[in-house]
Length: 60
Image 1 (spheres, rainbow, N blue to C red):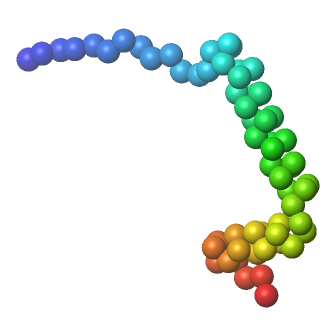
Image 2 (image 1 turned 90 degrees about the vertical axis):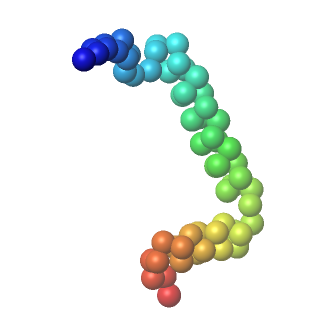
Image 3 (image 1 turned 135 degrees about the horizontal axis):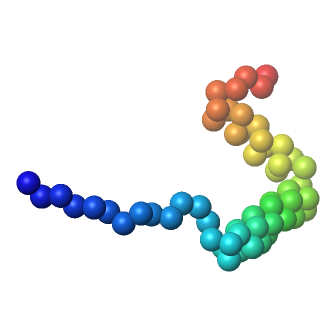
């Protein structure tokens, strides 16, 4: 019978990774706001409308 032990795995993010994650989330969020803010209103409406249909949500 063979017994093997595994080294413990660290759980959670390192403190040096947190600012990178926050910066990436901020860039993604600002990018989405920028795209929605400058897109024509009908394009945003159509995208939301199509998404509602893909989720089987009645919208009309």
